[in-house]
Image (spheres, rainbow, N blue to C red):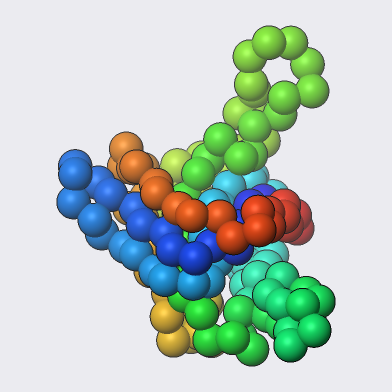
Length: 145
């Protein structure tokens, strides 16, 4: 599993020109599910995402997590994150989970996050989405299982 996280002052996702998820300050998480991912992977990644310290404390150091700040979390599926780009000029998606498995694991991932955090919004799996954000910093990290 690969999760690209961005600290944002706001973010939203639209499907068919309708906003289906939006947050104020918090994290936008783009999620790529890979073939080898499973429930154990999801649980570890959910914990890491919620506890990863990317928000400034009173001294301006990145010492606070999303759990600490209570900020919003917008979770968007993005299978292209699972691409292998090491060879050639076209990405390979051989390591991506098949769509049915990816959808199931993505839904379980979101459920695990919602069980631990009160403000979780999502995009729509498999839809053509338009994601809007204001990156704060910018602060962006790739979390990998």
